[in-house]
Every structure is written in structure tokens, then in C-alpha cells.
Length: 96
Image 1 (cartoon, rainbow, N blue to C red):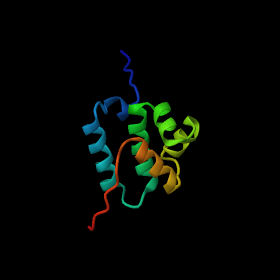
Image 2: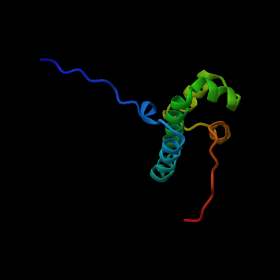
Image 3: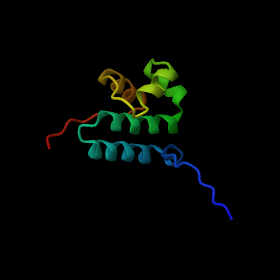
Image 4: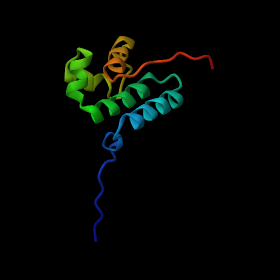
């Protein structure tokens, strides 16, 4: 008997706006100073929404958006702001 497994993709489980928002909030809490971690979480939400549409809304190419949100590098802050805006999210500064 062989066991097959598939790679877990969180984007397949982000089904509504509330789940996506909670996921991004949790990523910000867990990330610390790791911008690539936040970028990866935003990428997961963008894939759940549809990367092509998010890329259009952010004014970026789909390919560059995939690279920026891969989690392999820290994208420019301006790119993250474009993605946050395209996803309909807002950042709320708060004193810790």
C-alpha cells in the first residue's frame, strides 16, 4: 500500500474576506521584522482572490507579483502597499 500526499496550499482554504483578513493579521503578528514572511502571506491571499486580478488592480505584471510575493525575498515597501491596496486592506499603525 502506498501513500500519496499533496502539498498544502493555504490559498485553497481562504474562502471569504474575514478569513483572509484574519490570516493577514496573524501574519503581521508572527512576522516580526521578516518582510518576506508578510509578502508570502499577502501572496497567499492574492492567489485565493486571483493573482491576475490583484496584479491588474495593483498595476503590476502577474509575473512580477508572483516573484514579489513568493516569500523568497523582501519586496519593496511600495510594492507591498500596492498589493495591500489592491486586496482592499488597510494598514493601521498602533503603538505596541
